[in-house]
Image (tube, rainbow, N blue to C red):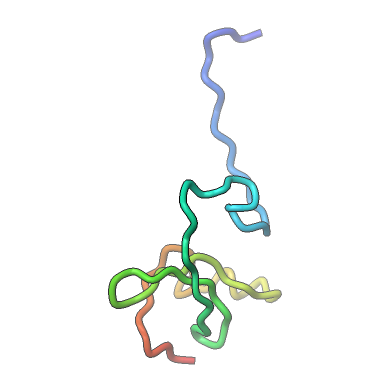
Length: 79
């Protein structure tokens, strides 16, 4: 074998929430908001929110950069 070599990190694309596989160190309080007509799970950050994930059955919704995880959004949310 290849002793002493580091393993390459793996990228996995799953439809499961991250916390299902890797529980967070501390619970995160999330809220559901409709953004651009799509249901999103968000985390409160100051006077706005950060998109955590999109809850949709339409694959095109996951390609919308305005709904990408980590995107900052501020109320009022426009549909």
